[in-house]
Amino acid sequence: AEVNIKPWERLVKELRAGNGRRKWKDRERSAYWRGNPYVSGTREDLLKCNLSESHDWNARLYIQVQSPYSIHP
Image 1 (cartoon, rainbow, N blue to C red):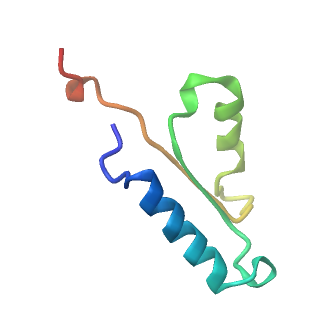
Image 2 (cartoon, rainbow, N blue to C red):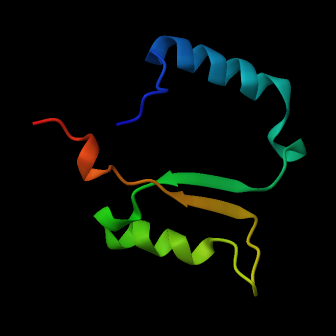
């Protein structure tokens, strides 16, 4: 489970403030994704865009799956 999730109202305010600091056209062109790609084929396809020895799509993808040891019955 994600432990760093802030309350939605606070997060929305922070996102809006951050979006106001820099115009979209002036931002670094990159992508970041963290999650479990094994829940659907579409998500698993995301891994094809990750950094490799032959391609750098300017995307950084990190696999995050829940450990079976972190589930409490």
